[in-house]
Length: 548
Image (cartoon, rainbow, N blue to C red; front, side, top):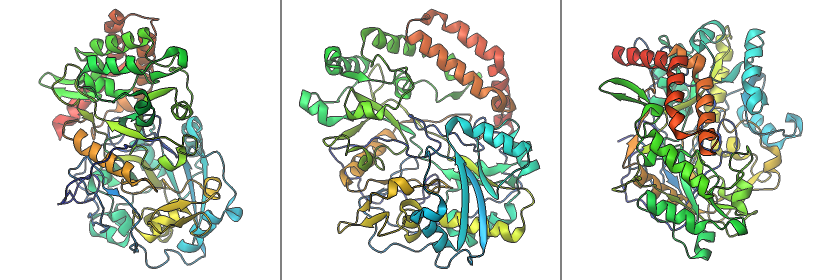
């Protein structure tokens, strides 16, 4: 049976356990410290009528790469302990003939890399695909205004990554190509790497009855709490707690303010909300849709975290917008909520700065005890890679063949070229089947690895125990999950106002935790949220849900 989210089979064997766990750090574009994507799919608030009627979605065809640890359910991703000895070939023939150039634009956290003609990784991609991949990019906050400028000036590349935009459905209709004829139904068979993207991700690309791009598959469990087990072991502390009081006791045992050691540096971590069984943003009740901040237990959550701050259990610079990883490497805190698939991909990056580093993913309990806190599940797709309006059909196929190559999954020969560079220069595979990056790779990496990305998986080069622990964590955490009731629903007000409303809520929570405001003032925050657009968003989601 196929996992509809990840595109991998459900488990046919017992998951392996492991003492050392995994945490996560997004290396490239679109992920914040809690793994939030910044791109635009067609889920909650992302714009465009999410009605797949009238369009045949691409026929899912699995690329058979056997995992060492297979998915037990649709919320887990497969685990690989080594790179397969005989990688499959997804694209046996070059997608280009060496005469075509594809222009592209995207977002990344990479500041710079050598230009194409001085970059072995980049030049090898061009050689292997037979297509010159001419990509430009910007970082973080520069992305949205740059995209808006490009669209306004009609200065569009062949393919680009789009952020959340007001009236996105209308923008796509006016500026970007309908690719339904190229990928709908069995037509996707021409692009097996993209056909391997799960149907749920393709659902995010449908706007007003047509397919308008490609959506990157995401990790369903998008954030997780990790404990730094090497330092905890030195202190004689086990990261075990079965309710809120035991969690507080653990934090107190960890914290040594004179030594500069604290339990956490994330007062707004999402697992706190899960411990109070708060909705995953929106829930659907008998009375209609309700936002998490309206939940009766939201003030209890605020009181819990505020008391932790007042007690000094958080690092005093927790609200300073800084890279937390160096502080975790020191370490100055030992419990870290991270995004994505945990430390699986990042472990080799951070152990040089922390040679003893070991981590363990921890499933938080309900604050009152009695079982696991429900795990928040994200939508199935992230970002939208769209082709410019009026692109020549032959060139559109060239672009899709290139993206198909880039989408090749873990375990394929093409994956290594795209994700790790030129073998023998940027990486090697050792005798244990582990991918070993050279000193050239960090300098040469450029925004190809998430353009458009691959089906999610767990792999940590040289750290199979991390993969085992992460997969075991997901199997346990996925026993109790909570979905966002608004995923896949359309709200024009959310498109226009959601970002500003979320920013205001975050600031209010920050003010309360730090004592600048009182928990008793929260009712006023909820009233303002509803008056400023929350009630309109609710009504639009309810209408969209009723129409399904």
